[in-house]
Structure formats: structure tokens, C-alpha cells
Length: 405
Image (cartoon, rainbow, N blue to C red; front, side):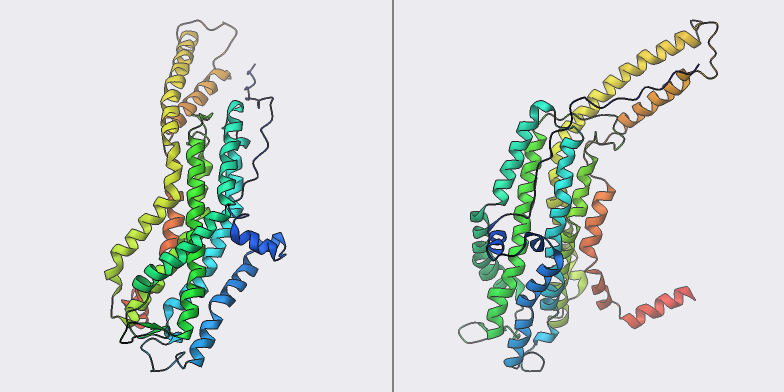
């Protein structure tokens, strides 16, 4: 009679209550919005935030540039309606940054709960885990941190980065050359001190939250986790960390859009070509992949140690089993009434071999092609339309139809 296959049972003690962690619900801006008596649910919805931010950032520029006669015309080299960079920044990148904020809120807390739901954190280390989460929450809720971010936006982002690296070196709707130096127009003042800071603040705040989450993962990686070398995700049970790539795909797309806007302006108004920006695009890809995926590498030492121990332990288990199988079925130790056909021993040996192959295939870094691909695609997608600047659309269509027919 075939022996019933034993199924591992769950530990009698239930998992600890998952932490209430959010990367969004806290900080100076969140408190100001709450102080304005906005409902909490509205603060975490995408559409209202995008509409409000876009209305503050873009329409005033259209109105002010029209009043100054620089919306469309030959009075300046770059009128407002032809400034592709400004439109992409406020109508594409700004909404993407807000969506990235909400995606982090939606995906990160469930991912963090997996450490407890999967019992990766031993019971004697739960308090330490919760202390790390509490520390991250304090940083996220820090009013001082966001005040410093605002100071960095105006002190570094506007006076240095925007004025010297983002702004075009020609007469535009937002700045005009003068004997004593370039001078901001009225529209340029709103642009430089209201619209651009909104984008930069959202960008800096996302960087800050990435730092908080990286610090949290570092602290959790210092805990001796209960990893399972034969886990089918091939990461000892930590495969869920790869979902970080999906949480920050919109973050990557926003960076791609910002770079696409800068490149488009240089191509249209400064005579540049797309290939000259190949190094900058490659550098952006490396930056995005590094800041998003590097923190999960904190778990590599534990995964490597788990794989080494698993190979030894499962190897010893396989050794004991195959020796018993050999003695029983090949050396005549099997009972006379027991038949090999229908015996559970064959299936058990196959299952053991499968488990050993899983341990041998275990990876020491929870990063795969599935993690790289969303970030690479999201970063490059906004830049892809610039390929049409190298090959005119009509010529491209002719070539495509020529290949097809």
C-alpha cells in the first residue's frame, strides 16, 4: 500500500501583526494638506493631486507668457508653446512623479509585511524588526527633513541646477539676455520659483523615501532571517523583493521624461543630435537601476550562507536516503511482500532530487531579468520618440512598408 505523502504543517504560533508602514502618509506637506481639512483618502488618490499640481504649474505660465507677448511669435528664440521641455516637465513628468508616489504607497507596505507573513523574521527578532520599521516611520514623518528638502530645492535645485544646467543658453519666454546678465521674465519668475520647484521637490522627496526604504532594508538584512534554501522562488523566500522594480517603474519613467524633454530642447533649439546624448542616457539607466535595486543586495550575504548550508544539509539528507534505497531495493533488504512497482520510495527519491536541484539553483541576489526589464523599459520609453529626429517619419514609414511589401 502506498504511503501517504507527508505535508509540512504551519507552526502553531500565528505570524505577528504586520506593521502599519507607509512611505507617503507623513511629512510637512502631508500635514499641511491635513491641516487644510482635506480628507485623508483624497491625499492618496492620483487624479486630484495631478489636477491640482498641473493647474498650479502649467496654466499660469501660458497666461503670463501670453500677456508678455512670448507665448508664440518671433520676439524670442523659444516661445512658450514651442518649449517642449516645459510641456513634458509639467504635463508628463509631474503626473508621473505623483503616480510614482502613490505606487510606492500601494506596493511597499504589502511587500514589507511579507517578512512577517512568511515567518522570515524569527519570533525572537520581531521586536527588532518592528523597531526598524518604527525608525523608518519617524524619518518619513519628519517635518524637518521635508523642510530641508524645500531649502535644497531653492538653494541648489533652482539657483544652481536649473539656472546653470537646465535653462537654455538663449533668449526664451522665461529668460532674456541683458548687459548685467540674464533676466527672468514675469512668466520666468513663476516658472523658476513655483513650477520648477514643485517638480524638484517631488523628485527630491522620492529620493529621500528611497533612502529611508534602503536604510530599512539594511536594518532588516542585519537580522538573522529564517530563510528556506528549497523555497521554489529560488531566493530562500525573499523573491517578493523583486517587486521593488514595479513599485518604482513610474519613478523611472519620470526620469526618462525629464531627460527626453531636455534632449528635445537641445535638438530643436541648439542643433544637437540624439547620439550625442548616448552616454547621458546610459548613465541615467545605471543610476535608476542602482538606486532602486541596489538595496535588495543587502540580503546577498544571508542568501549565500543559506545556499551553502542548504547544499550541505540536503546533500547529507540525500546521501542517507539513497544509501537506504540502495540497500533496500538493490542489496536485497526489501521485505518479500513489498513490490517495487507502486512503492512510494521511487516518488520520494524523485521529490528529494527536485528539492536538491532547487537548492543548487538558488540565487544569492534577489534580482532577475523580471526586475531589470520594467525599469529599463520605463526609463527608455519616454526617450524613444526622439528616434524620429534621426529618421524622418515619412522615410521611416517608407522603409517599414518596403520591408512589409
